[in-house]
Amino acid sequence: MSDTIAAISTAPGEAGIGIVRVSGPGSEDIMRKVMANCPAEIEPRHMYLGSAISSSAGMADANAKAEPIDKALFVYMKSPASYTGEDMLEIQAHGGTASLKSILRAVLESGIANIRMAEPGEFTKLAFLNGKMDLSQAEAVIDIIKAKSDLSLGIAEAQHSGRLSDKVREIREALLDILAEMAVDIDYPDEDYEIDSEGANSELVGKLRWVMADVDELLDTASIGRIARDGVRVVIAGKPNAGKSSLMNALLGEGRVIVTDVPGTTRDTVEESASLGGVPIVLVDTAGIRETGDKVEKIGVERTTQAIAGADMVLLVLDGSRELDDEDSKVLEYVEHMSTDHMLVVINKEDLGNSISEETVREKLPGVRVIRTSLVGSAATDAAIKVSETIGEIFELGSINTSEMNIVTNERHVQMLRNAEMNLDEAISMLQNGEPMEVAELSAHYAYDSLGKIIGEDVGDEILNTVFSKFCLGK
Ligand SMILES: Nc1nc2c(ncn2[C@@H]2O[C@H](COP(=O)(O)OP(=O)(O)OP(=O)(O)O)[C@@H](O)[C@H]2O)c(=O)[nH]1
Ligand SMILES: [Mg+2]
Image 1 (cartoon, rainbow, N blue to C red):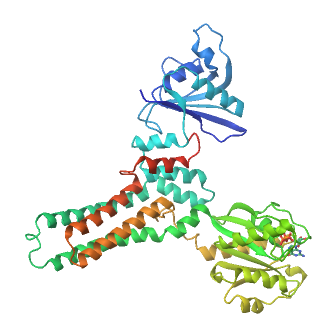
Image 2 (image 1 turned 60 degrees about the vertical axis):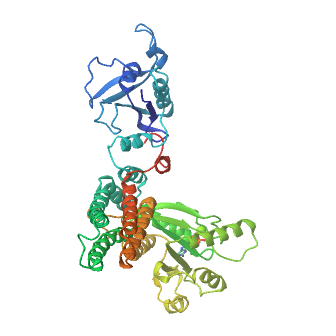
């Protein structure tokens, strides 16, 4: 008999409710042992109110004293109409750590054969193995859970609904037709293409190019997909006291980081996720860049350098109340190598004067976008809006229509698409060079297999383990 698995499926901590989830053939028996007053006839997918009781009481004879744990709602789902496709039980109790742990313990100690704790992602893995969803849909589940903006959620939802899978299947079908033609040519080399093989091949080449164009179209969305899923990494840099942390707080709309008039206040990089106008952002506040003998501050400056290196965009904050000085020059050196397309210079402290002209800034950073701000009082909100708008303009994420476009966000999918592209390219070259049809067909077949791996066809345990190990426990 296959295993029955159980886990707490809600996040740890205190909450209104929390859910213990069970999947496998033992689900019904567990329900009858753990839920007191369980009706004799249970209608699947209907919710009942009961009382969860400790397992030793549950296992003892009917007259034994049951130890109540918590009042709980429970629902039983009969295979195959469940998330995993197996029989399932979900117990909704109060969302306290002790209550949920006790219920989970009662489930695990219920004496049902082959009951055990679920592994991370195992419920979703079962859903995949039981054909409830394909692999790319299963992978979207984790993206839905992790989504921190409307945009990333929209993309994940589209993938979960099977839009990417449909597109991949469509490409594979087209490729399968071509493979069939190639096979005919291999079996009957002289009959079908007796006139000149070059002419016949050019038709095949044309068809393979169409397929490759489809693959490329998906690959083209990958860079934006990565940003949409993980967020645009926006690093705030500048010399000490310029107002970096003030800008961070303004953008987050809260006093997240410490702001003082002491230069060198921020010692370490501070990261926060935010959604600005529907665009996912990871904001990074940094230690002010300057030459320093202070050991801690020095490490902070090193981290700033690393943060800049990994940035999708830099917000360079200058203190506009004073002229550019050596410290600013030092900061400019740090960002010189970057494309100014992904940079915004924020000349701050406008309320204290305008000692830095936009021209001076552009002399150092040709073509860079510049705005003036004040980050004290109510002006901070306007500044935050201006900066958010610029980020939106640069990354044009607002224009993405997640309900129509296929956007590839998953690194594994990108890899498989790249493999397919490479194999198709090889197949095309081989045909053009008059190499034997067998070898060209083999390359095209590899492309077909790579595309299949996106949706989970012929994937080995290794891939499955990697995919599902990224999930949290209980999912
Ligand atoms: N008048 C005025 N003061 C500002 C403005 N922006 C920031 N400040 C002040 O400048 C000081 C430094 O601000 P922070 O935001 O801590 O500067 P920082 O760049 O993070 O500084 P470090 O963390 O030390 O590198 C604080 O006293 C802020 O209140 C502004 O637009 N106008
Ligand atoms: Mg700071």
